[in-house]
Length: 503
Image (cartoon, rainbow, N blue to C red; front, side, top):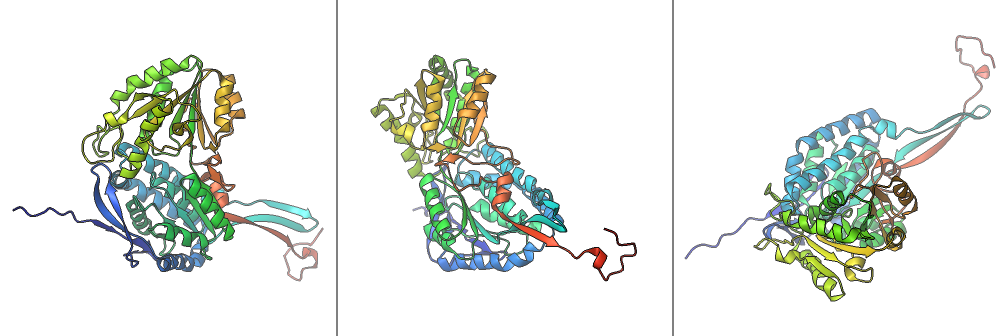
């Protein structure tokens, strides 16, 4: 009789006060390898008392951290940039192991996070105030930017390294201390980040990580020593975070869900549009808030576009993210995979046409896989159109005119990202003027702004008045102070200045 094979689970705790801390609440959650379906780790869920300890560490570190000069803080951000850049593959492999995305996507995620760190290396310039000499006779007025104190971030499972960087990098550069509550589905990247920041020279308590569930979220939202909260996740939770946090007197930016459209006009380069639709619809298994979820084919573009996409789908290899030949990995959990797959039943039941059913092309085994899927003849009344699927199911809606396509986007409750494919510059310019969405791509399927602009949507995709990272991120993590000053007339001064006093 052979002995049973047991796999030792990775134990994942917290980080505060500059050290790794094992949880004491007794509550834990599973962490899986989505490619195999096996549990790979166990993450501690923080108690209210443990959240309080993390916040206390951040609060204790805040006074000294705030006094760091801008040049010293900029030097540290350069060291952080270099250290994370050196460990980008280690971070990426953690993402693939716990989220499932292919390694190339994981490396791309880390790169987009690093770009924000690079941006905030210029913090001495970003925090420059304004000055008005002689606003009134003998009176000068100027403004300065100062940090808020302790701030927190609550981040999603789909970008467990990048989205935290979008928050903590500007927050720390502005002089705040930070408490991060990452997704309990893939928490390891945040703890590696904490170690790297310590190695770079970040003082103990300036950056802290607490893992957990709703208990942790609620305590962060109500904690009296946390001045601001950043959040990225689904719209219902974003609304809850915003309403709860602001009720407690906090500054809140809460980025919610999306239903991103890609409009393809009859004059578009169909081959380019099809390539873009495949990469933007199925990259990271569609688990991106900027993923294209709906293709809007205008006029006679529909048949040619669907045929071109269908032709490309067999070439998308689905498999383990660590396999260099894989182009799309699994979904993050079995439950999420099953929910996404359910739209391949409800879609046809409500009148859509299945062009490709990913259940038929999923790899064998227990991994949380779903192959690339395509629904045609979807209408706005269907669940596949109304819901944020967040998986590799792409819907095609057919309309007759540009005006109908624009109306679809503007009437949708989400307003995160949109793309227009056309060769007509005049139409493109009119579209960017007319469309009610926060981020617009012209022949670019995923218009994530570069780090020196800001990321965020409109309508139900954002609660709050500041987008994340970029100039608006600096605004969010600082508050301005206006100073009005008057000094005695030098002519009446008792100090010998060594030269004649004249007016």
